[in-house]
Image 1: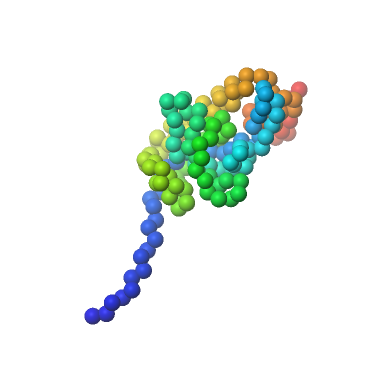
Image 2: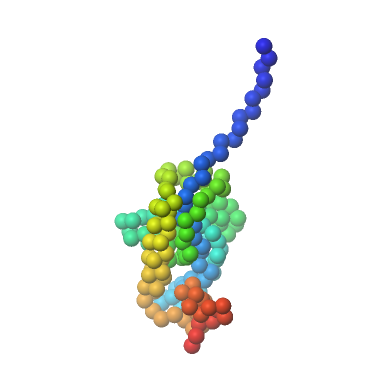
Length: 158
């Protein structure tokens, strides 16, 4: 009888349906939102993040996200939904994201649930971006709402 050395195979987590979003390139900041800052403190502008949890009791103003930080490392952080845009349902295969989602105890969602949550968050985030500062935009403005209205030129019409 010979003893063969059995190397354990790495356990591959099952893919999950999550809501993916992008961080706004520029966000309004300061008194009345007259300053502009790129991205957020944790994420670069345009970074892809995955929403793994929301706070429905707080009207989804804050969401828990997993993404690559400004330093390039994977992080899990709560961020304002107004700083995210282009919410969409995506099936995630990345082991780092799946491990972090499992560590916080995220329950599996179906594709339909992820699509419904993405539509809800997109609608709410647009509303929160518009009403958060309650003051007119600076001129010229590079915030997400102004850039999407301005089109490819990227300059707010005067």
